[in-house]
Image (cartoon, rainbow, N blue to C red):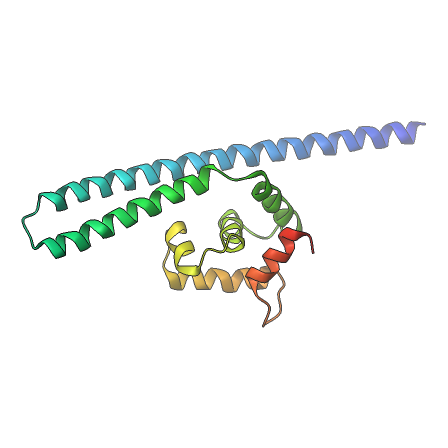
Length: 167
């Protein structure tokens, strides 16, 4: 009987530690989400100001159109990025939890990149979303390939798609 009580107490302590750890992770992720959302809002405002300045320029209409289209495209990208940060579906959250449990060596950025890869974003879109160069993104994917334990010719995208389906 004493052994059983000790095991229950030990199990309860481990459970409490895990809860505390998860609460810390949630708080950290909330802070990161706030930081990213603020940065996106600032970028979007700067792009809108730039767009207003471009409209005020007295330059060739075709050149002005190219410049405004570029700004509008960047604003749209920032809006999509903000939505991605805020609107994780329940399925995405479950996927990330399972992936982190299976591969605890992946950091937060790699987990986020994994989600974007699974959602069929290409390297250039992911690099833009994360705020790094395409070459930097390729380096991260190379390191992730190793961390996921994939063979030389295995695709990260295929692995993550299969993983999300439970294979």
